[in-house]
Amino acid sequence: MDIIEAIQKRRSVRAYKPKPVKKEIIQEILQIAVRAPSGMNTQPWRINIVNGEVLEKIRLGNVEMLASGKVPQTDLPMKTFEGEYKMRQVDLAKELFQILGIARDDKQKRDEWTKQGFIFFNAPAAIIISAEKSLDSAISFSDLGGLAQTICLVALSYGIGTCIMGQGVMYPQVIRKYLNIPETENIHICITMGYPESDAPVNTLRTKREPLEKNTRWFGFD
Image (cartoon, rainbow, N blue to C red; front, side, top):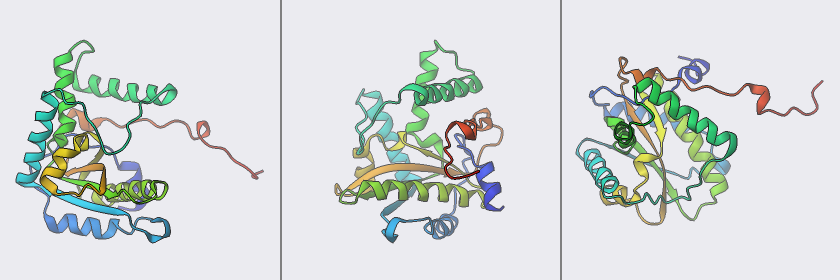
């Protein structure tokens, strides 16, 4: 699979087979992915890979926090979307609920779906990316995003699906409890990993992109 095909085929996978992903395969993916661009070669990422019993404990911890009504308090500031950005978020939710057959007024099923993000969509493995708080966020944010995308693109060559998401790390105290990530690091994002459940309706979703001319500006061209 070449890079153009990988970019075109990549999508967020939200349902996985129970088949585990071998450590050796994840290592191969990461050895390639860390070639992602890095400003001034700072390589700000800390890559925490988790599966098995430890991942199950994190799932349980997240669910307990959610059920208790504990408001998520991430390491990074959370801002709400507005305007066209909010509309795209809403459109995504509508598409997901339509595919899943969840009615707008069915709060119970909506809550059940929300819970899926906190348990990493039951993926057999997850990667949690953190970085030192002392780093310049203007550099580290860009580098971590590039690393996350590169991991997802490389994983496709191994038949592995991924989803870059934030819900799994919305209770950083749970993550720290089981992964011993120090307070000197911010927990940024997580990536679920596993073999896609091809028959799952939710995996048929392919999000839309705006026409190129909407968000591009050209200067100096004829």
